[in-house]
Length: 58
Image (cartoon, rainbow, N blue to C red; front, side, top):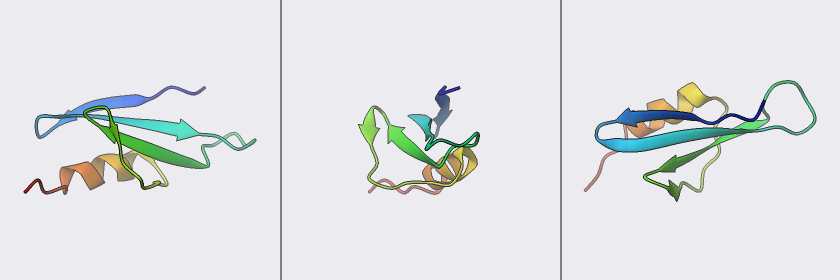
C-alpha cells in the first residue's frame, strides 16, 4: 500500500507519503506543504504532522 495521508493544518494543505524499501513497513515518510516538497525525511506520518503543526511562518 502506497497511499498518502492528507490533512489541513493551520490553513496549510499537508500530505505525508510513505516510501518502502522492500519491507512491510515504510522506511521513511516525506512531507509536502501546499504542494511544495520539504527536504527532510520523517519516521512516521505522525511526525510529519507534528512538524507542520509546530512550523512557524515568518
